[in-house]
Length: 514
Image (cartoon, rainbow, N blue to C red; front, side, top):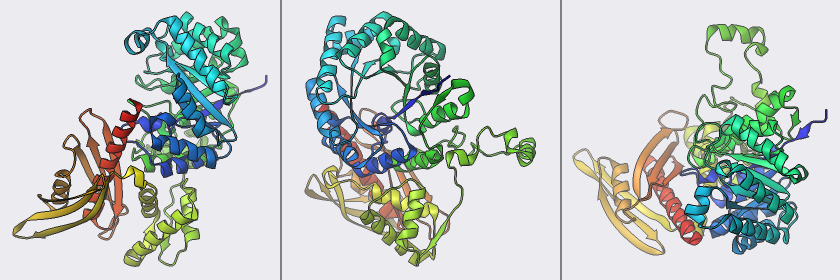
């Protein structure tokens, strides 16, 4: 029996970026997109072009620069969204427009306030307009898992007749159970014979922890595309974890009888890159990519593995490209050594960026003699995390701190806020607290610092300071930022400013959406 090909659709740069605090810069999106191409995903959903100028620029840059996968943009079912999406993805050799409209009763009545007939009409118009731009058009009935089966089928049938080449069935709020979701896909094939002539896709959220199980149940039922995110990131509890889906399909080929065109040895590298750039760490016991995934602590397990890895390992670290070595680089190491290490970690950067990272590595090596792998990754993350001029609404011009054994630490800061220079002073329990208090005197008080975390990258008194902060706005949106520097106070100030700019960029994006 011929094996079905399962299309791997990665939405880390679109849906994954909607994780609280996971906003990526345009440069970071490009770095991740290049690594996704190396991984071998079939489709990269690079963003939501109409959401903001930054999102549009990122999708356009990915479409221009990344080759191999189809490059997809998301668009609501209206002309403005679809037109804007095409302007961004048209530079790809394989462009795709992904349009959607909600179909469940609660969404129709509470959000859209439209009849069933109006929804179908809007879906058809959207697909037809997208089809006028490119052949590859995907349509999603949003919240399909809570849509009545027959109405979902009616919408899908209309979208296929309008020209959709991929139909995606999303479990938008993670409501479905595996058997139920698989049955939904089977019902679709039964009621809409035309579904057999297009790609049937699924997009599952993890609110009940079933995203991967639901996706695999859909594959069993005949779906030929699966959508998800690296490390399972995404809004609320996240999306289906792509690495888990891929390794299920690869490891259990005997069960699923399908093929995927993915280089599994790039999985671990891709996971680390996404974690480094989003600031969302992978839990230790995470399947496939957690640090404990191939660890054997129990004595009986250790004995079994030493005799034969097959006793307790159904896949090997090599299968997913796991690496644990800590390469050491000195001040005489050149940019080629740095570039090679970064490439191993998934960073595909231009020469100018590599040179910038190398200079910082050499500066650090001059002070510390040796720079370890984690130092270099931290520096690379810091450099690639830099915001564009347009994204920097607040800039740190300068700061100073005065402290002593018999005085309360005092700090002064000069910021450029929307091109206006502002100066403030602050007191604190320590120098970092003083700088933070000074900054917050000049910033919108609706933003609150929720968490501050400092760690030394590799240990020792001369280690790099890695500062991560978490901000929250008045609507409970969370923004995470990190900065690395030899100086703890400077790293702290830079992390706070990055977080503030992320929050302000998010606010601009929401306002642009209306």
